[in-house]
Image 1 (cartoon, rainbow, N blue to C red):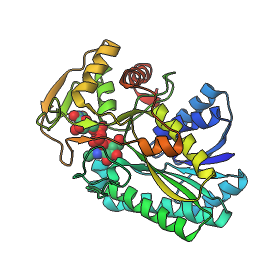
Image 2: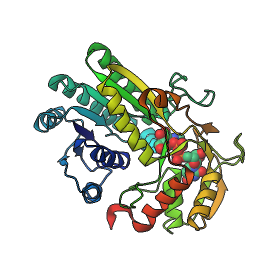
Image 3: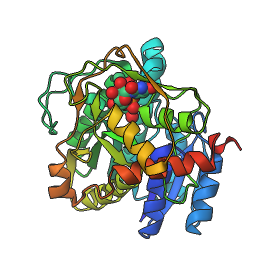
Length: 337
Ligand code: UD1
């Protein structure tokens, strides 16, 4: 089986690439390195000792997708490519809608044109409305609060409609909760190009001295310690979820959505304390105001993925903070060194 990974040099994609290669798949990555580095792919090669094809280009380019599929006898696609900064999506909504929706449409058109039937799509817990009961199931109400979230929501709808019109298609929508950590080797990990928006990279960069202190966004939430609760999952567990999703797609048709989370929520301060305890480093922090749009808590009911995909997160909070720190310590400036 040969799998095309759009956005293949990114954080979740490179971890998935390792899982695929270790499970006997062949792979082709397509990336324009707009927010990623070819160095990550070089390291995947070094780590796994396996070869895979690397194409530089844009996932919006349907002709390039078709050529790549035909040249490498691609059997299935994992569509990771997309812009993902929530704040930027509010400031530049058209950039987000154009890029994220055009690439999804191009991938589906390329599938139609070449006869590829299996698609795994990187969706997000950002598709769920803020007023749902926790834990979130796949049928919880969906509504977004920023253009980034809407591009995931709309891409899901486009994929669902395309699967309805092409009964041979088999599409899996993976709704990621909060991926953190890194490969245990410390050779690949998350490498934000700017000041990190997300909690874990911010903690890691504070620990290594790139940031003076963490600002905890709000301490008056209705949670056990007043700080926001999220469903953090180890990126290697998330990577394995994609392999399971491909196996599922191969034996089904239609379109199905799955939550990929652990089902356990941790607060901001739980994460800070675990990081300090496991790694023996202090994280200076101050309490600041709430960040607009943030919820008290957000965590998954992952039972559908366990039942239908046979997937369950195996790694706990200790491994998440240990591996995140191991990556940051070895690569203080990410892939730039
Ligand atoms: C965010 C996005 C979500 C996206 C996900 C990708 C928002 C509102 N949501 O989710 O759409 O799919 O990233 O991983 O941006 N926090 C701090 N200090 C910081 C950073 C974060 O206290 O410097 C807190 C937040 O208030 C939140 C928790 O840490 O309670 C997690 O934040 P973050 O890592 O940004 O993830 P989400 O907001 O859950």
